[in-house]
Amino acid sequence: IKASLKHSRNWNQLEQSLKRQGIELKYKFKGQSREVQGISFSKGLYSFKGSEIDRSFSYSKLDQMFQHQGHQQTIPNQPSQPTVQQPPQPSQSAAASIIEAALEVVGGIDFQPHGEDYEEIAFAKKIRREDNKRRSTNRKKGRSI
Image (cartoon, rainbow, N blue to C red; front, side, top):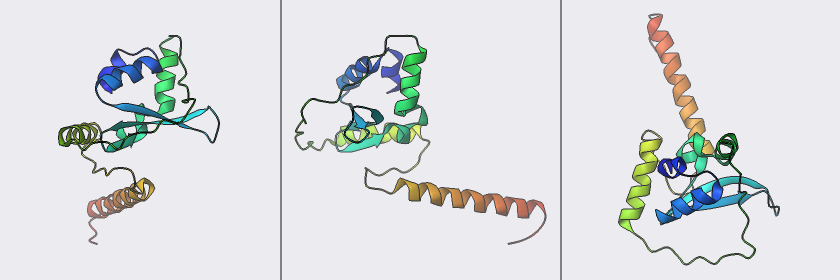
């Protein structure tokens, strides 16, 4: 994704560059409107929201980047008719490469394909951080837990 962004000046160029790598860019639209709310990146059986891979890959951040570059923005269009996708053929190398790339970008966080409750995971991490901070503060003050 990072490599494609270096050579892309708008959404269409990014989408074409990713397609050449076997990565599909999907847009999430607000309700039944044509207003884009978010994006996800898919390869093989795996799909990740842009912000799950890296916060800078969210739709709003990428859109800001394209606008900031001062280039003519091409707004992605919703397909006029729903596309029927064939079930993806499992490809061990494709699946492994997308997971490897995602883990490398996010620093080793263990992601599962869509279906996980990411809010619950984030909440658990917050609780662990607060607990570690509390323990650290108590150690500094010479208290034991």
